[in-house]
Length: 183
Image 1 (cartoon, rainbow, N blue to C red):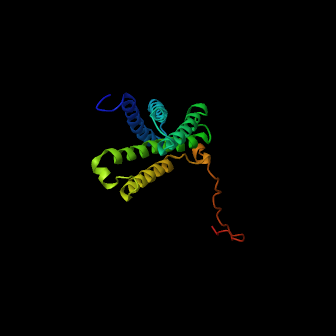
Image 2 (cartoon, helix red, strand yellow):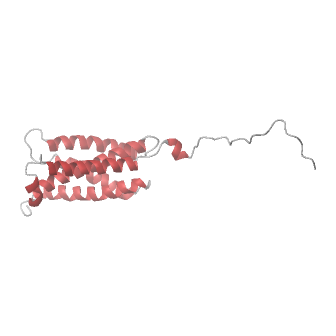
């Protein structure tokens, strides 16, 4: 125990923070179609590990945290498949972008919950987690993640390959009965 916190809890928090920081950088890189392979691997590994270590905590019955962990793990499985098995080819890049942003959102969602539970100044505004300040911050995080996902989502295939609609040039109008000029 370290300051009353178990080793599992310390590890869980550290990998969660690493996942959030690298996730923010990776999503930023998606705006410019940068793969950032090393940071992406760190983001995906720490986020998956955060989900899995969350199940190791003692619990009684089904809780919202377990629900988020189950959904987050399923989303991560799809994200990993899109990134590494399908290599983001064709529509799988879109699947990867959406699932990566959702995974980051779940991490940020839990971060906001923990901040409102553990930081006294924030807890004073939302002691039960159902007050308007808490909902407003969660809503803002959701909007920012949705906006980031929208901006990072790949354009349609026609825009990626450079295919353009062929536009015929407008023809000059010629008078059918013109007189030859006198020279």
